[in-house]
Length: 604
Ligand code: HEM
Ligand SMILES: *[C@@H]1O[C@H](CO)[C@@H](O)[C@H](O)[C@H]1NC(C)=O
Ligand SMILES: *[C@@H]1O[C@H](CO)[C@@H](O)[C@H](O)[C@H]1NC(C)=O
Ligand SMILES: *[C@@H]1O[C@H](CO)[C@@H](O)[C@H](O)[C@H]1NC(C)=O
Ligand SMILES: *[C@@H]1O[C@H](CO)[C@@H](O)[C@H](O)[C@H]1NC(C)=O
Image 1 (cartoon, rainbow, N blue to C red):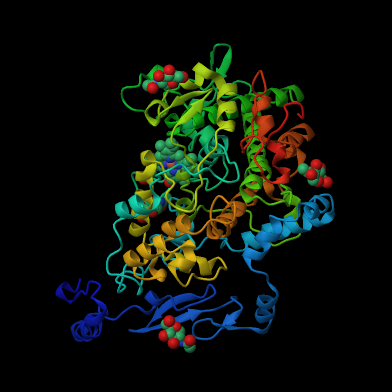
Image 2 (tube, helix red, strand yellow):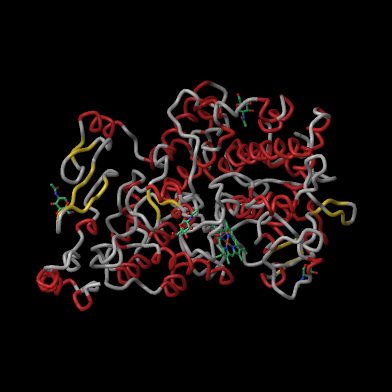
């Protein structure tokens, strides 16, 4: 390296001088260490790609962006027209969450399909497929494509050696992550989610996403252990073949289990010696063996692990009935595809339906995309992982059948699952309100450290500023912290710490944005999160024309199980007495159609 020639982010006033000194210094050495990389300014708009050219120059590649000019800022004619006619995200969010009578009519017409197709294509089109960059490669490369140990990313990292940590805007030093968390994220008083989201939803979110968010400890941030990059149910079957084989019974396609009090539960680690993360004090016979290493953390995760285990074995029975000639392997593999289908169905029609608050009745129907250009593939992005840290959902304590449990009693509590049983826990989780995710100051002290970790990771991986992500996902960048938070006090503090709204970081931006009216979080979480989510769900191979047919699922019966899955059925077909099971507390003013997931126990 150029030794003393290396400039380390000089203060703005000195930059001119230093730049010149560097030019002299760099003469003869190829590295123009002193000149500011012009890509640090993020000059290329509308998804144009910034490439450094020569010693000080850059080019924006505007190919197929619909714009031209040095910075991809001049719209082509049709782009101008489209932008003129296109309503803002705020507008269509308003329409989708109002006029219930209108949506009740639309729900039973072909317009529902048309709109659902539009939602899917518009959202999924924001995700590059095949994937592009990763934390090591800020340009297209074969390694970034082929090495699936990396999380991908939508925007390349902030170039090395920019004048400030976020590019050219903001201060030389980012605010201390611990301080940010303490001041802006720490909960002082529990704020309930206004839409009535419950803990059943929160644990589903955590359980579901931990099949594809498995940041590698060994390889470092930016790498994942979940190489399936999507809904592969690795959290049930293990993320590799060896673990899967340990978890399988090798009889009738089933998974190993234990029976306690006449109920089926995951086996203990003594019976199935897979690696599980538990505190060392907990004896092996109390540790449960599950697909995901960390699910011992919470009884809420064990409940879902138990439900899906029972569902798998139940589906195996159904399949065996219809296919008495099938061996263990085919029963197992087919059951797995059915459970993947069930998961996607539940996520779209119960989970996302609830989360969105839309009155449009969402529909899981892969055929909607058969006439469209759509790639059946997916790669999990580091930005998706960052934004899904929804620890604000967690309450201050956990109420099980009227009994209150602290974090200390609840975390890694290995007896609670079997003490209460699945029914009682589902009922209790479904009746307890979760916290609001957005709006700030709503993360319980016990999990605040995770938020600190998210911010530190984003610095290590050099995530671009929040406003650059806003633009990338078709949103207007915020012009001030006041506009972001919708108030004055916190905005002023943020301004003081960051210096510039264009230097605000991704995760703080998402959490501190003013929530939508009666919403669980702000516009950006929806507009940035939904594309990743829908692309991941519909990009699954089972949704492709080759796979989406009865034979893939063992015939009409299996196909029907997929097409009619719901949270309620997942619970009630696998317990003796059907509890209240939903993603919102009883009576919450959730979207019209979310009754799919709850209500009376007779509608099965
Ligand atoms: C009491 C409940 C919870 C505790 C104690 C907890 C704790 C943790 C911890 C210790 C990590 C690892 C942080 C790191 O690697 O630096 C983590 C990661 C994560 N948590 Fe939570 N969490 C809880 C609930 C939730 C919930 C409800 C969600 C909802 C989606 C969630 C989403 C995530 C995600 C997406 C990650 C990243 C996982 C990865 O990349 O491997 N967590 N959490
Ligand atoms: C392009 O962006 C750069 C950096 O933001 C700016 O200095 C330049 O004036 C812009 N050029 C045009 C043609 O808009
Ligand atoms: C929405 O419409 C579909 C199809 O017409 C119907 O099956 C479903 O019951 C309706 N859902 C609600 C909750 O209105
Ligand atoms: C992926 O990249 C990492 C980091 O360079 C490397 O350690 C790993 O071996 C690569 N994986 C494969 C399968 O090549
Ligand atoms: C675990 O939960 C049970 C109730 O199921 C409770 O009695 C017990 O005290 C809890 N364990 C710990 C270590 O707090």
